[in-house]
Length: 121
Image (cartoon, rainbow, N blue to C red; front, top):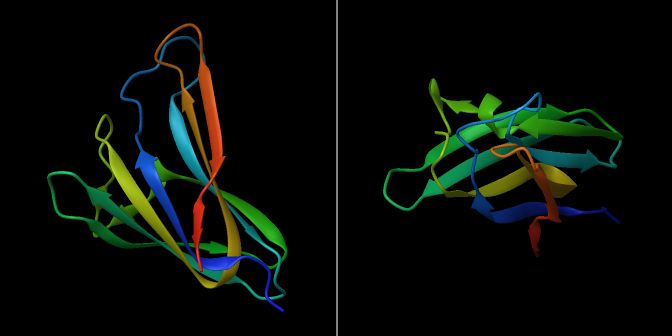
């Protein structure tokens, strides 16, 4: 029996445009692969007022975790813009677990948010 799901939804993405202090504002998609095979995850990004960025990929080795900074993803040289709300669909080539985290360091009082993505069954 496979553990995890192949499709996950993250409705609230946002890369904070500024940082203060020593920490850099960022967000990550954290993927856990419990299988014996490498899994390719495809990230599709959807916006309110522009065309989606589709087909951004990352590999997750067998029985490992990978923290993918969303700012590092690109589709045809295009990156997710900072300061723009968006949503993500994460699709694994095999079942995985997906968590989303955001570090907002725009103020001296940093905020860290981390939630499980919504699994599509």
